[in-house]
Length: 262
Ligand SMILES: [Zn+2]
Image (cartoon, rainbow, N blue to C red; front, side, top):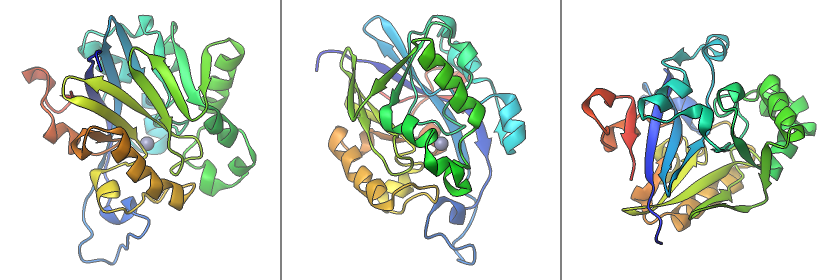
C-alpha cells in the first residue's frame, strides 16, 4: 500500500425516525424504542493528484418530495472542502436509491461507476413491486441510463478497480447491486460501506435494515466489510450520525458538517 488518500464524509441532509424503523426485527411497541435519526452523506477521496466523489446525493426538490430535511446541496458541501465538482472525473454510485444518485448536472466532467447488477435491478422486473421500487426514483434511474448512452458510465462486475489503489466491491443485500469503496489511507484500509450497513448497529448487532433485497446477502455483507477493512474501526456506515461524533472535523467551522475519516 503506497497511495494514501484523505477521506471525508459530508453531511447534506437529515431525517428523524425511530430505532424500530431501522431494523428488520424492530418493534414499535418495544420499550427500548426511541429516536434514531438518519444523516445523509456524500464522501470525498483526495490523493494521488485526484479527487473521487462517492455518491451524488439528492436535491432540495427531492428532499421536499420525500419529507427529508435538506441542509445543503451536496455540491455545496464538497465545495466547503475546496472541491470543484465541475472538474471531478470519477463519481462512484454505490447504488441507485434516491438518496445516493441524482444531481448529475452538477458533475459535467464525471464518469459514473456502477455495478452491472444494480442497473439490472433498477430497470428490471422487481421494480414493478413497490416493496423494491420504493427507494428508487425513476427519473434518477433514467438519468443514469442517459449517461450510459453518452458514454459516461463505467460498469463494474463484482470487484472493480478505480486505479491508484482504490477498489469497488459488490455487496448485494440492501439492493441487488450495491457496491462499497475500499481506499488506502494513512491509518490503513478504509471501507465506505454506504448502505451495506446504514448504522454501526446494523453490522455490529447483525440486524439488517428493513429495506433489503436479500437478508442472507446482507448478513454475509457484514462479514465481507470486515474482511475488506483494516479493522472494524475502519468501516464507515452509510447513514449513522455517530460518524460526525467519532471523527474530527477538518476545521472548526466544519463541525457537524464534515468529518475526516482517515
Ligand atoms: Zn441510503
